[in-house]
Image (cartoon, rainbow, N blue to C red; front, side, top):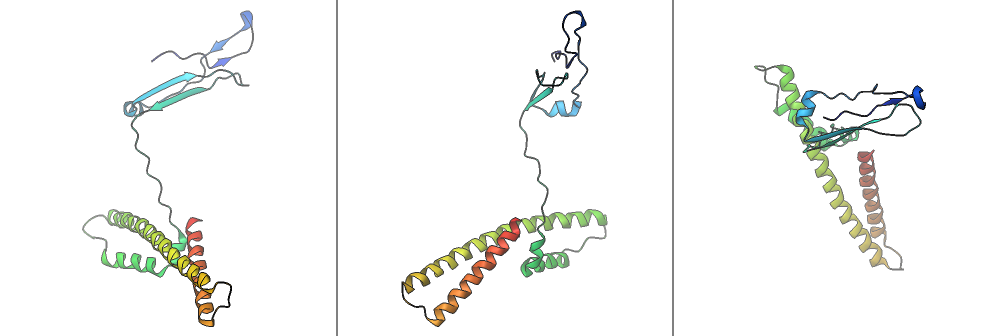
Length: 175
């Protein structure tokens, strides 16, 4: 450890000038033990009479766990509601252990199921959109500059509605 420079100066010159180390940077010992390398230093300049203290950390860090973000629009999908209902029915909480522990274990598993379900749904929606786009393209190319038949027109409207529905659900998942 090296001694840090003063963190406060009274901005005077000569005998009236003062410089003190008033500000501190404190780190817990357990954090210091986990860090691969760290460096502290006092910055210069600024409009304040206090100088900033900087900390640089380097080391093998794991990415922190991101919080689970539940999307309320999943509840509009009958497949999601069915999956959750079946899980709760098939995995009752064991009475021999702590109820809270069993409940938390079930919630953790539902979190993993929900994440997998959302990724699978996105893949299904993407593949369905590709199929719809190719069918729409085939219908419009087939028509050329001529008129479209009543059957093709109803199929075109049906495909456009399916596309709009999928895009709406994707937009809701992103919000």
